[in-house]
Length: 264
Length: 207
Image (cartoon, rainbow over all chains, first blue to last red; front, side, top):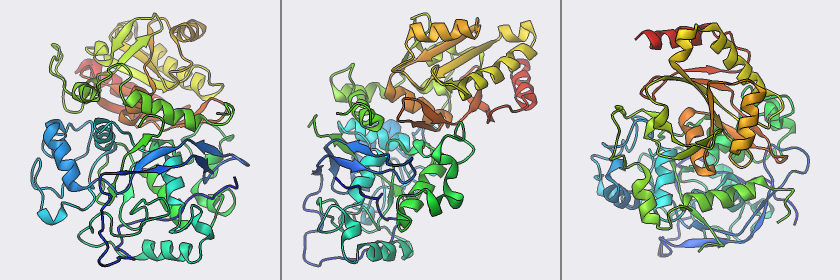
């Protein structure tokens, strides 16, 4: 299994690129895609370090405002007004108008302004969990027609184009950007996403010694220790993860859930 | 599953197992008990208190604990793992400097607390050995499960990166919590002059 480089892309809420008119945007809504086992190569890692990933399921689309409203109604402690400060900063669900109200046009948009704690609890309450970095990046590596997008003509270009578009004021619905090889939507170009182990992204100065490859992060890191220097979007994701704290709420960070394939 | 490679894998598996409530088979249950703090004790728990976490812990004496059991005292602590070769003893050394600088009267009103980021290996026997090796007489060392460990790390702002060989890269942060479990000060890094931390501790003790 040759190693794939870390993923691609992503970023910001750009609008769509390939909207196929007429195609039911989210006919798979609520379902999960099965991702076969594979290998993830961390962007910053010692020589030949690879992470095997077991087969798992992942939500085909990010969690929407409407999905999250149901959760907030069932577990009122996660409502906009009720959330504990320990678990979310003051921006929590700031695009909502009340504990479970928001502009109806946002119903199918990805929910954002949620903390890691909220995302984690949401998934837990669905009998799921947040995907790990390895899982998420492995899915993000997929192109439209093959699991290794970087070998697909035009893929890197497309991802970069997505990343360079300005954020729309209103987030598009889920299931409207790209559907990849696995049948998973919106890995690129809609929102950033929380992942379970985001806090394993360490920046220089935090880690314990010079033995860590993380010491070379960022400044200069891109030039020699990264596995794929063309993978601009993966750098951005790494940067974002290393700057987040679990209680932060960010207007362009949402999430989706995953689940172990051995425990359907 | 080639054992040598992947902690991330095991990690993921564990996480799933734990977050799906290994102890309570019903997922709904699990969610509800999550942050549904109905039976609060006499201690007042604010919106920002670490005692909102209801996870179960055990200490080096094999006693079951909740974080709120440590309430009522000022807490000075850090996340560590007892198998680490360099940084953890150093952060413990930093904590001991703080401890030894304080008066006996001040020490008596402080709970020194080490929280394991390595629940798999830090069993009570191992933690107990670590405590006696480092002469941590009045300290508590606690561990929970992987899920609760990730949660507390995120609450305390501690970054933890599991390493292939079984150790961790992690933030070095000395945490100062008030008697209500709110984080009031964090000393970042190793070998930091503890003057600011001591000042904050005394402010709390005298408040």
